[in-house]
Image (cartoon, rainbow, N blue to C red; front, top):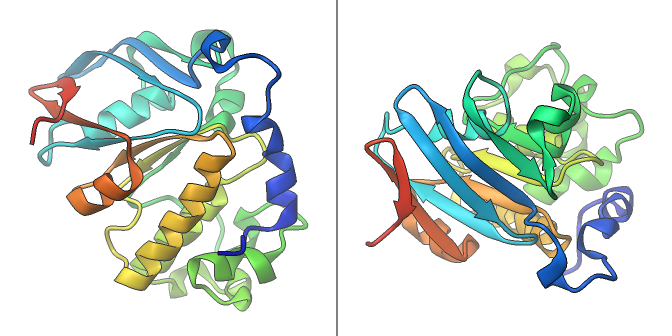
Length: 226
């Protein structure tokens, strides 16, 4: 299938998968060490470049708490590392542009959709990649359905600095066709070296997207056995 992601986005991410060093010598794309907050942790986690790891768990088990710790959105113990660089040694905005959390219900700071994207965004190519018309860039946020907000929030996260996507049920409100489009966008990102941590209640989606499957239970993260 021909890529429908804008060329500008593709060019910005070519460096993600390009390296003259053997892969074994590179640090993990994302590493968490002894992260702890509330009832979750301590948690250790490693995700390599171009891989997706799924997380399952009952409601209230702390999946969103874990993602928010990794994104450095809430106070926590422990540290996370991006390509070997510690979160604690990086300005918070710089970290969050690179390690980006997409909530199940994302916030919007302006009434218009287009304001939430960088100047010069090619909406005519970007929005149809997830099944939305280009003119949706001019819509008021109040007009958007839950599924439209989910798709736009994902596209909004695909900035030039992004290296890790922390996705909290990114397709829970979508129909089958829209899920397929979103997953195609995510596969393109994986091919460019992005690491994805995917919280999903859909075991079929986890099987399609992830190469490793984890479960959060009693505040501890472990390999999923079923």
